[in-house]
Amino acid sequence: MIRVLNFFCMALMGLSILALYHVSEQTRVAEIRLAKVERQIADTKDGVGVLQTEWERVAGPARIQKLALRDGMSDSSSVELSSFTLLPRRADAPLNNSPLRNVNAQVPASVLPVLTPQPISVRSGF
Image 1 (cartoon, rainbow, N blue to C red):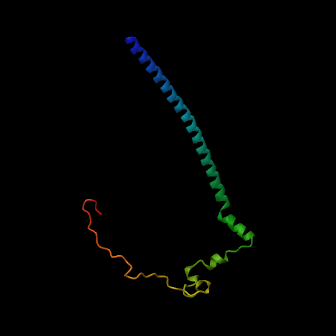
Image 2: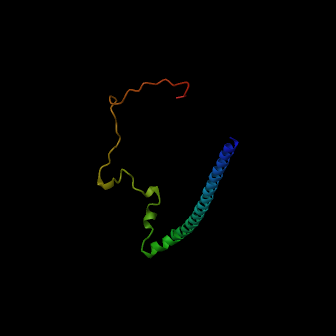
């Protein structure tokens, strides 16, 4: 009886060793994958930094101004509308030569549901 019990204990120990070895191998593989992903994240962050620097160079106000002047654009329209006082009043200049209309919607009282006050529950606070 003791030999059988010893055999089962040894078999259980062997299976435990194999299971622990399998878990350790999975951990090692996961660590390798994690290191690879962390390198990819670092490379992507470096790439984003390069793109941000390039964007700042390309979208700089001095460069935009130079390109606008080269292509014959002027900033007169921005000067004309630089103040709210220079904008036309709504009543003076309707869009598309159509008359202005009041767009308020009024619902008859007979259509509205009658709301009855609900008691406030002391337990829930609502």
